[in-house]
Amino acid sequence: MKAAVLGAPIAHSLSPVLHRAAYRALGLTGWSYEAIECDTARLPAVLGGCGPQWAGLSLTMPLKRAVLPLLDELDPLAREVGAANTVVFAGGRRHGHNTDVPGMIAALGKAGLTAPPGPAAGEPTVLILGGGATACSALAAARGLGAARVTAAVRDPARAQDLLAAGARLGVAVTLTGFEAPQGDPPELLISTVPAGAADIYAKRIARGDLVPRHLLDVVYHPWPTPLAVAARKLGTSVAGGFDLLLHQAAGQVTLMTGRPAPLAAMRAAGESALRR
Image (cartoon, rainbow, N blue to C red; front, side, top):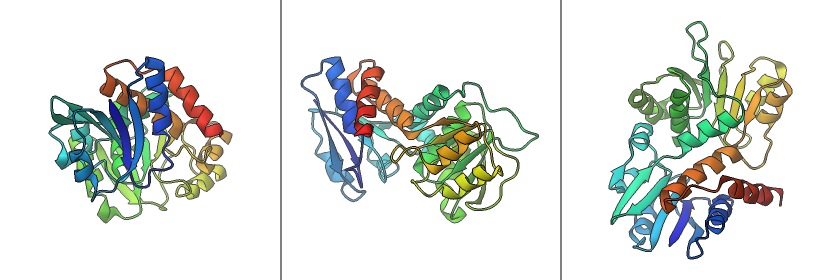
């Protein structure tokens, strides 16, 4: 069977290392997993070329939203979020799933956040940096951790309509603020969904003590640690990194595509070894 990760750019992806390690540990000698450079224009043709020998696809930027109209079925979570990072081929149909959300919750759980964020005098206790597809998944993760309201710091509020729509579907009230605007009380949970370097202004705010969350998830996994993670750790914040998110969302994909429990330890070892190299 075949599987692959699609995106643009894709050469940096660690997904092949994780999925191939899972196949080895599961004894799936006839399975392969590759990285395919694919933008939104090419996506319909690539999907159309996936025949019965294909088990599934992992999707990264910029495809998580673009894939939705090309699917036959969409699981409830992916529909609420408005983004699918996984396609499973079964029964001649394309099934869309979102494993980013449980991956975020699992990564935060490993870092010590296992209870819902607590209420803070009527103010949102979750701050999300960014407004893209990953931020929509972060909204769902925040809901899964008990948050009913979230503040999202975005560079262009006019382009955050998908985020607001996801909040409405998820039942999470979203307040938009400028990316560099001062925030109110420090959130209990800060989730950064922006690329490496884009959150450096928040790293400086944390270092100054202006903004000190109790928990941080930074979706970047390379280079690691990010300035945001370094600053937060110095002040005692529990930090979850992008590698744990990537690992747990990949484990969900392995289970969906193979029907077998994902060998998390083998996948973690392979991924950490690759990052050290």
